[in-house]
Length: 94
Image (cartoon, rainbow, N blue to C red; front, side, top):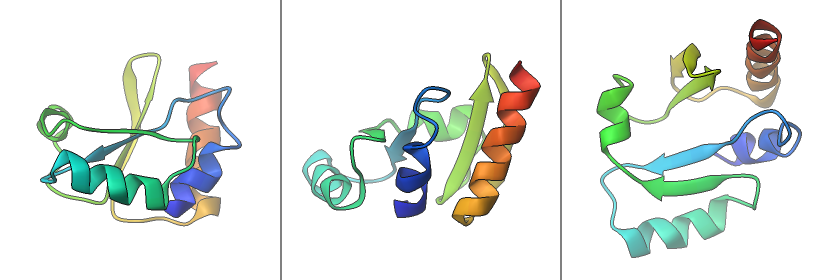
C-alpha cells in the first residue's frame, strides 16, 4: 500500500484513491492506516465492496473511470506498473 499512496500523490487531479480494509476492527484499521497512508488516500471499512467487485481477497485493485471498471488485478504491483495502468485508464476515459 505504500506504493499506492506514493503514486496517488501524482494523480490527485485525475483519480480518487480509496483503500478498503477487510475483516478488521475500526480502531485497528485506523491505527494501521495512519502508519501506511498519507492524505493521498482515503480509507474505510466496507466489506460489501469486495463482493460488489468480485474480489476474493487482498491485495486487489480496481480502476473505475466514468463509472466503468477499466482495469482490475489481484496482487501487489510496483509503482511503474501502477502508473502505466492509471495512464491507460486516463487515456481511455478521455
